[in-house]
Amino acid sequence: MFVRQILAALVVYAAGAVPAFAQAYPSKPIRFIIPFPPGGPTDLMGRAAADRLARAWNIQVVADNRAGAGGNIGADLCAKSPPDGYTICMMTVAQVISPAIYKKLPFDPLRDFSPVTLMAMLPSMLTVHPALPAKTVKDVIGLAKASPGQLIYASTGNGTSPHMLMEMFSAMSGVKMVHVPYKGQAPAVVDQISGQIQLAFNTAATVLPHVRAGKLRPIAISTRERFPPMPDLPSVEEGGVKGFDGSSWQSVVVPAKTSPDIVARIYQELSTMLKSQPVRDRFLAQGAIASGIAPDAFVIFMKAELEKWARVARFANIKLD
Image (cartoon, rainbow, N blue to C red; front, side):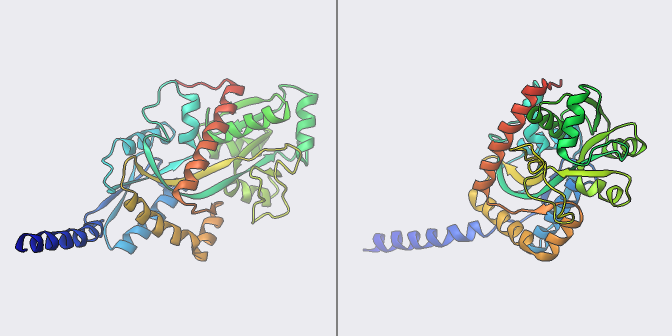
């Protein structure tokens, strides 16, 4: 009888100890890896997420900018970190483009990370220099077909989202254009405004001031859904390129094999944040449309993105060392 009582007491104690252990997270500072330099959209959203977690959990969440190789240096660091919940990371569209264009990549976007949520989509705007006689997607396609290899477009570098979007546009519309890669969005936009570059896909928030000032002409938005600040601007798909849908995006992940309970706790806080109207309005002012989908839906989204950009890379024969 005595032994049975002791065993029963141990069972009760163990049952109570599991929730207590689970509730202990987080009990020390958290590192939040942001794989791009300070000031850009990934940094701004990463710091917003880090601040939310810090305030919700009353614990230090340290933003750690690890820029380089299009975000792949920070992503690799994240993948190799302990899966204990004390490393949280930003991931962008660049990390699902990378497997298609790099011969050697030190991480796998699906295998080496546990997805938490898609933070936001960042639509790109197809714009042209005002001197170009094009006002619609069909006009752009017509000009490109009339003069193959004569239209010049800019991107922020080989394999970046603006490059891949234009190559997807070329593949789906059957046109051939000349690509001029730049080291950043700012110099590319400057040269487009000056007329050295005729057209480009750039994040909507970046070019919106120039569009409103009449320095660039908007043609279409890259996503299937229209861009709320410019509701009259059609999508590329509405312009005639059926099935066209692409943009930059920002997300939160943790190293693979992180406890599902920890992933759920992080997701709960970020999902609550992304449902807040002030946050959604602030993101929209930065050219981003807040998301907040659940981890399982985010996995499906990532798989589709990997397949899409792999097709584009094959079409354009894009390979980087």
